[in-house]
Each structure stands twice: as structure tokens, then as C-alpha cells.
Length: 432
Ligand code: GUN
Ligand code: ZN
Image 1 (cartoon, protein in one colour):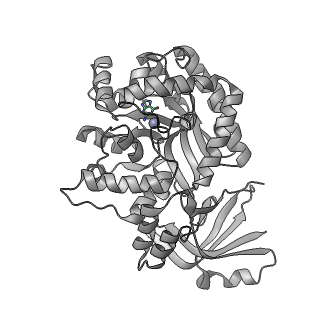
Image 2 (spheres, rainbow, N blue to C red):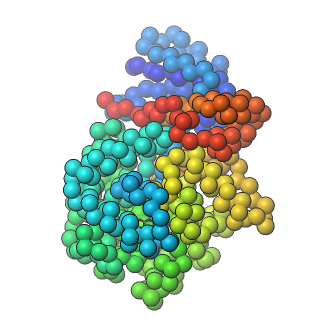
């Protein structure tokens, strides 16, 4: 068995989310019986290296001064909105109508979808993101494009065709029945193929009829290990609209619950304007929230409430929400999450800990996606998706990280000052 032995500083997480750090670490990677590369050992170089010295087929990769950390996991992103980043609009609904829908209408064209998918995956990897849960568009071709491109790179990716059969312009609106048929065909074509997963993806309650949401819920029951991916409680105008469209629902989130769209592996972006009953429902159904602070700031949507989320005990993780979000970089997202936490909880004096922010974008996000122990961490058994970080990538970062007196100080310097320049290499687990 051929083994790759990486020697550098190493960051991992324990089961309770606390960080594990070795300044002189060892990460051993080898293919499993199916040929997928996984972590077989992780920890201190001094403690673990001896048995490997005796083995014949060991390649040692020594990376002095570098930090190996889990590949980042982006819990909510829109690959077709790669070119929508930075579109100026007065809030969510005008942004959708004036920029996003017209742009997404181009994805019926497979060649165009392929070209954006390739650029998008390049950009994810350049930023150290090895897995994302992404919206496609309402066109089935847009799913084929992102799945085929991810498969060719061996990446673990989840994506789905958007369901939106009303209140959407020609070119992106789908047909109630056909959208569901296409969804089922795409599940059968892609879910569980190599490292790919399918997500049933109603855009949000206002753009699906009750019949379409009903059908989506039926598919979610029939295919219990596919993901469910949508938006909820992002913007106050949106919430007023949902109240008009679904007057019988107790809340916006309750619309989804009523159609069987809350369960393990259901992920809702934003979750800003929730009440306590909603939060309890997230926890009870093991539904996860994807927190997108750069998007929430860009679209002036509001702030995710960390204290209420922790009190309720539901799962969450970080997400870019590109193109509402402003950056592909997990460092920019973690920085924004920190500032949102400070601003929103200034009375309580909350200051999110650097390692907790990092966890939210790696092991925490993986747990929220139901992929705990699979990705987002570097414990034995995890698929070997990781980043090699150069903490000295800019003069200021070199100076600042060199003075760090604790792990928190090291991670925080990178969260505050960092971007794609920190990512020297992104390594995706290879399959034979
Ligand atoms: N709500 C419905 N569609 C979208 C979208 O594309 N982006 C965001 N941020 N919110 C949405
Ligand atoms: Zn979104």
C-alpha cells in the first residue's frame, strides 16, 4: 500500500468541535479498499512517524512553515451566480428580478453552463473549498454541467435543479410537473455517483406553487438520503410576501415543514428572522441553517442570531451564498461572521472564537450536511480533502502570524487579514 506522509503544522477538530493542533504534525493518507484516499493517521510527527519509517512505499512530503487544515465546506452557494457577484440592487427581490433571473436564464445552454461550472470549480479550489452544496438553475442541463465537471475533478459536491414554477420570468420558470420529473431523473442520474450528491432545490416558497412543494416533499420522502436545499427568512419583504401566499402557515419556515421539507440533510440558507418555535423545529427535525454573512450584509437582509441558535441547539455552518455573497474566500466569510456576531450581539458582548469560526466552515459545516467523519476534518477515516496554507503569504500576514502566541491568535490573524493568497495548495482525495 502506498502511503503519503505529510509533515507540517496540522489543524483538526475533535468531536465536540474543539480544535486539535500540532505545530509539527503528521498526516498520513492512503487509498482504502475502494481506492479512495483517506486519512489513516493524524497527530504529532514525533509520536506517530516511527512505524512508517520501516515501511517500503512511503512518500514523505515535508512542508516546513506551512499549515495543513481540512478543506473548507461551503454550505450554500449558487454556481450560476458566479458572474452576479457585486450586482447593485436595493435588496433581495429587486436583485433577483433585475440581475439574477436574467442571468440564470442563460443556463439552458449546456456549453455556457459547462464554462461557468469549470470557472466556478477552479475558483472554489483556488480558495481552498473542496465541497459545496450549490444551487444550479431551473434547467436540468445546469445540473449535468456542474456534476460532470465535479466528477472529472473527483470532488465531493452536492447540487440540484432549481424548482420555481411561479412568480418567475420566462426563461427560468419551470413547469410544475416537469420540474418534478426532471428532479427525479437527475436524482437517478447523479445521486451517489462517485462523490456526487443530489439536492432537491425549491428556490424559496414564493416561487413554487403548493403543488410543486408538495411534490418536492414526496420526492424527499422517497429518496431519504438526498439533500433538500432552499432559502428561508432572509428578508422582511420576502417574509411579507410568503405570509400573503401561504396565510395558513404559522411562519415562513412552517411552509416547508407543512410539505415535508424539513428533515436530516435539509439545509436552509439565512434563517435570520426566525422565532423560537422555528428554532425548536430546526432542532427537532435535524434541519440545518447555512449562515451567509457577506450576503446578508451585501443585500442588507439582517443578522443571524448566534446566541439564539446555540440556545435552541440546531445545526449550522458557514456559506458564501455567491452571488448574493461577496466572496468565494472562506476567510472573508469567517471575517464577516465575526463582525456580524459582534454587531448583532454587542449588548451581550459576544465575540466568536477563531477556532469556532473555522469549525463552522469545515467540520461544523460537514456535520450540518450529514457528512460528519467524511469531509471537513482530518481525523482517521475522513476523505483526504485538505489545504496547505502559507501563513506568511503577505508581508503583513508573515509578520502577524509569526508573533502569534496561541492557536487563537494564529487563526484570527488569518481570518482578519486573509484571502485566497493564503491557500498554497488544495488537495482533493483521489480515487483509483
Ligand atoms: N432567495 C431566493 N433566491 C435567492 C437567491 O438566488 N439568492 C439569495 N440570497 N436569496 C434567494
Ligand atoms: Zn442563496
